[in-house]
Image (cartoon, rainbow, N blue to C red; front, side, top):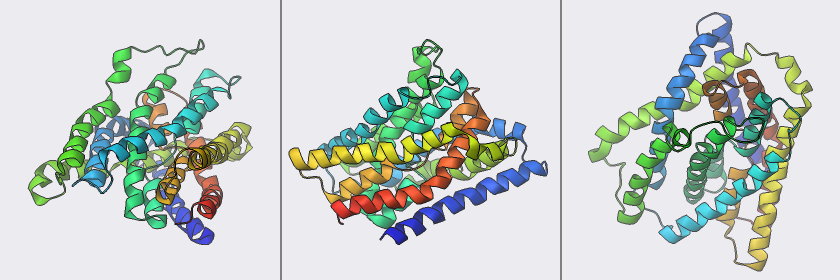
Length: 330
């Protein structure tokens, strides 16, 4: 099982790095430059992101589920525990770094790539039922990254965000959620299947635009890396601290919570435990780079942090999942 997980993670990371390499080379030959990538991040943030969020509801929850509304809400609460641990933990570190770097490091610690890496991996390890629970994790991720994440990106030296509350509550991410949540209710409560041909005029454009997210984001990441001193990436001690917190400390803390709940409160099904851990241990989210570009932070630093944690996750994720499956065998 360990080697199977290792192969799955390595394959996903290799796919990401191939797309990054294409972006890197495209910049070097002048076909997709740093300026073009900055413009593309606007497209990603304001157009593609809302479609990704809405499409994630349609694909993962359409037609209802064997999991009831009560279980859905409990699972959302359970997945929120990851962030209840990660957000305060990130505040304990990176206090001496410049503000522009500090917000990047903290965002990289809190938010993991539970979408591109988490979903395929949980499907391979757990199956379709695990995909449903991981989709709940993505819902929690989207709610928090476009509220707390946006707030954090605007923090000043005083620790307070210098941004209007309306810009935190109304942005492409929260607008995507506002459109997606009514659809979620329609699908879970009334068991409407939006994947049927009758809905294609609405759902296909959303799906097509949303499918641009990963490849375009990886091309941009490669372009940004082309303007970064990559050699210093593995010399930066802060990147290792980010990796330690994101890939090891947070997953183990979440696992400790699962063990406590399982022993002292209620039995935790193996499918929930493994799905939760798959969502807790991925590398830093790609949107760290997107947020850095959108909010005029250090894009180069964000790019190297995401790249380094993604590379190291090939080792850490299989180890974490092997540990979980020893306690919660599927």
